[in-house]
Length: 250
Image (cartoon, rainbow, N blue to C red; front, side, top):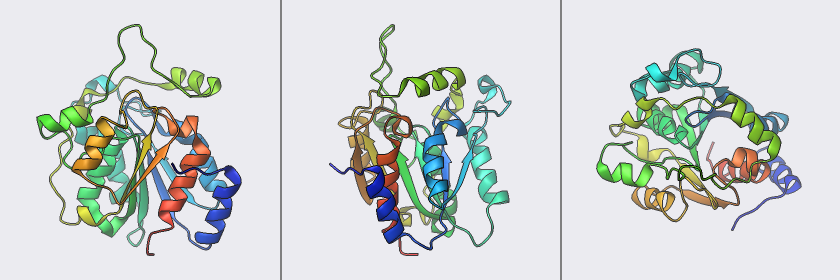
């Protein structure tokens, strides 16, 4: 099992990534928003990286009613607009997606390939090459929901749990309509899977194992966390990301 302490992470980064001005785009999962990345964003920005956190349609502070979003394309449009309108022509980014944010990341991989994406991270995330295109995709990628009245296992600190309860929004039903056609350059984008060992939703030995087997990533890390490593274990999450990014040939 891989692990980093805070000091090891920063030391590794300064040795391996000094002088690089890398741009990370952090993509939240369903019901969340840009707010959920505040710990990871702080670690990245204080270490000299450029970071973009955005709200997908009907998420975070976006004013759209989630109940009106009937398609995945509509839900993911803010991320596509970022690539088409906000990202400079000669700039590439590193995508980091959590949970259903993995679907948003995969959509961009098919659309933009290596022209715009240096690497893609799936953090306790859906990693389905074609989205929910088949019955097997639904079987492998849909999370296990807790039994009524049963509280899912959580390692989230109390203050983050309270923040989450205040800011979570309903999940747009259009997310289940995510289906992708293979992009010509999709398989050339390096992908990294960060598997949460105590995830009660996308279990490491069930959904995550199946997705890794069907669309093998270039690297896999196991993190001691529940479904939300950015809350439960942000320093180690940051360390894994930095280690994987160090392998990119810039």
